[in-house]
Length: 506
Image (tube, rainbow, N blue to C red; front, side, top):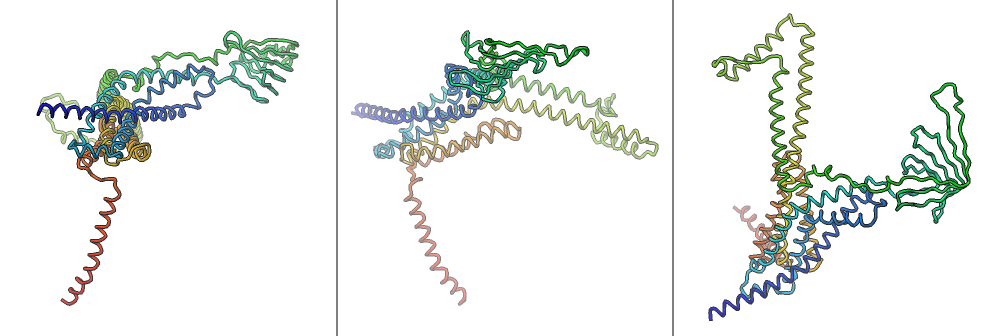
């Protein structure tokens, strides 16, 4: 019989785990797709002006959006975990399934356990993703974005306006038609780098591409070429001479290389911290710190040569002299120098200029060292963020699971509102922590982990409330508490005058 009871209990627990996981996977997939789309759209809008209107083909845009979608996974995953956990346990609470489970003597922590195991695997996956996939996606995405940005937009002629998009050419048309034909065309050829000395005027023209878009053909009709054929540097020639060549039909071939995307060497982008793994960031951090220490040591060694006096004790007795003796010696020298009537004005001027020069040099050295420290802070911050974005999935689950069981509301209504509030809080704390860490006003690990530490406190609080079956978000609780407070206040008002009268009689 005991074995049968244990067996039945295992079956019940397995059924319960399947129920909870089934309620979790659906919302998780949907919310992850939605958050991924939202952050991808935000990323595209951020660079929309720089990538729109480029003649690079849909396949290039498709690869760019694929890299962007990989880049936003570490940001969208915590929000998806928070939303899905809220919806999962909110739905279970809304349909009284959590109530039935609790009445059977099963704690909320046991109900949460299967989803918690899944979240641990998701956290490990995000940590691996941040260390391997994200640096690769950042490198590919930002290098391709640079290639698209440096590619010229699609050639388009506007009526009555000179177009300078084509290298070495400035073209103006008075009228353009839907079939690509142009009316009253003026073309300035600047390929000789000698100003507007070569111009072509045609009554009409049409354009088309050849050799897979490598060359643009201007087919001109009824016009003339005007070229100034004089040597402007010679004083003996008439500067008004020019050559005219009339034509009825002519073709101009223009290279369209500037309108094609040329892949950039990705090695130029590998020095950025967001494109490095944990091992590379640790190695760079050690190098930056070693270079900083070396530069500081060099500054300290070079500093004494800028001063007019040097204390170089040679004997053992002099080496044991206290700092007080050194300070008194310097004070005595200053009094002797400034108290002497035979000091020349030029000596005082030289001393003042030397002090100002040294002060400027110290300020410059401080700025240089501050830049070195900022590079160290940024590198350490990126190293910590590899872990913080992964651990934030656990923190968000610690908030969402108990909060969903307390709210007992599923769907995209109240859970979305709660998720947005906590995500905004996480975003603000992350931005502030990064700012303080980069400026050196806060210890880098503390700045990087500040949002997780604060939200972890919320998660622990909600978990305690959920384990104690708290009615934290039920209006009746606050209504009853308010009525009790109101009754106590009314009772106090009734007894207060009686106490006052007793005091007057006494």
